[in-house]
Structure formats: structure tokens, C-alpha cells
Amino acid sequence: MAKFYVMGNYSAQAFQGFVKDPGQDRGKAVEAISQAMGGKVHSFDMVRGPVDFVAGVEADSFTKVSAIKLTREASRSISHMTIWDENEIKADAEIDGQVVSK
Image (cartoon, rainbow, N blue to C red; front, side):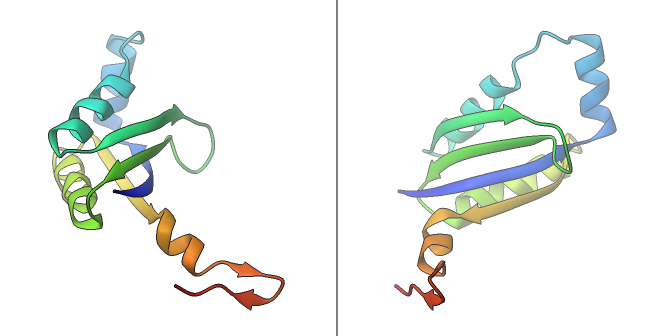
């Protein structure tokens, strides 16, 4: 399985839900979605700054994680979701000016 970092923003609709129920655990929703596609959540954090959340997940493919992105954005609960493939990042990382390749 590959590891992915997922970052994004909640929509105004999602924030309305938080205001109504501030105790809700969004991490459980992320875990349920990930498990439904055969993945695993390693971390889920709500953060301050340009994004509202960051999650570390494992999945079989970028395609499966992208499908989650499409369905979540279509539901209007999340916007501007970005997916980073950890393996691709490591493969393209520069170390002392040298590009590490696969």
C-alpha cells in the first residue's frame, strides 16, 4: 500500500455542522471512508492556516484516494482537497543537490 497526505478545507456547510455539534469527531468519518475503500488512516488533524485538515492515509492507489476527493468535494462538505503521494515525493526529493530517482 502507498502512503498519501491529504489536505483540504471544510466548506461553509461543514462549518455550520461544527457549530451545531462542536463535539463531533471528524476523524471517525475519515476512518470510515478510508476503511470503505480498503485503506487505513495513520493520522488526522485539524490545523490552523491555509488548510483546515491534514490526514496521513494508506491506500492501494492514487486513483482510490482521488475518488474520495471527488465524492467529498461533490458532497460540498470539503473544498480544495490536495493529495500528495509520499512515495513520489521521496523519489523526487533532492539531497545535497542530487535528485533521488526511483
